[in-house]
Length: 432
Image 1 (tube, rainbow, N blue to C red):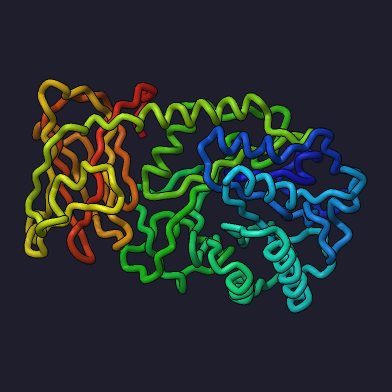
Image 2 (image 1 turned 30 degrees about the horizontal axis):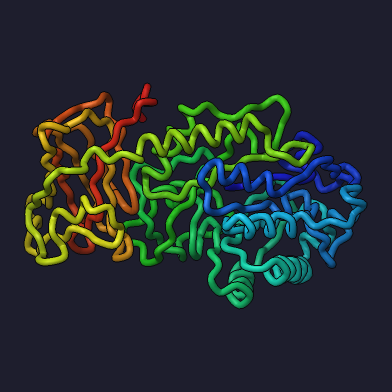
């Protein structure tokens, strides 16, 4: 879960100017525990706070700038929102993360390469040493077209992060641990590899979006994508906006989680410092819908056979055991001409209709499937390219076939399939 809250919340804007006075930051009822209620409503295990956005206003009392909550009327300048946020997350068992915008439209050091990079590192040090374990740190190259020219020392920043928090995930357009998916719609590419060549990506450069959206089958760096998208139109709260409808959130889910991505939904708190009740209700509705769809696997009770099996421990039925740690593996000789296949045969008495097919690879050993096709009773109903951690196909209409066959073509070795599942989505009114 992403939380965009700051000066823009009070100025009704998305990108601030940096000239906003700290007196504008005056939430009357801010409650970070309520924010965790929102994260929990969505089923989120990670919550990321925008500690500083492009306007440069810091949500913690940084020792390196006066432009922070210390100069605001909120609790007389005596509070620390990063502290309240991380404490609330830790108390709830949710992993906290932080975003520290490199672009700073307020600080006078911005544009002076050495001085500003030292300033940024100092603030990074504050955030990663003063608030306990931080699970993800966000970097990006976002800045306006007419912004002051500035070179960021990303590699030095990354090294510092590793020294301060060894187990943290580092996010940017180029990773190194998690990469941006290339858009803010929440859609991964229909082809989506977890691998890229990081040397081919310049953070903040134009024209990289397609490459990071699809990944690279020849990539040597494992940097899975994260889809960031707001539950509303904007990233920050605006009075005239409301949460996206359930149908749109489910479409985002199928095109992010269902295309080998992590989904990071943004829920912006309002000017009082609370997430809107209607937004939390929509998040809860969204989670309930996902649970309803995927809580029942209609492949349960099926038998499985395959084009071949490597041997004991790698049998076809491993795709039905519900474990991510086991998988079906064909022999190395199999499939070199006509691909590999695995087939489920459903019991006649319980062959209920389904309209979602779920395929998962055992990505602990890499991503291998480059093409696949799904047949129900011999009729092709879905096809695609990559699979990865999870591929979801929402069919045009429910089908109640007895046999479900998945044909696969792979690179970098034989496919290793950990799951094939069948589900009924009662909310499906359109197909991606």
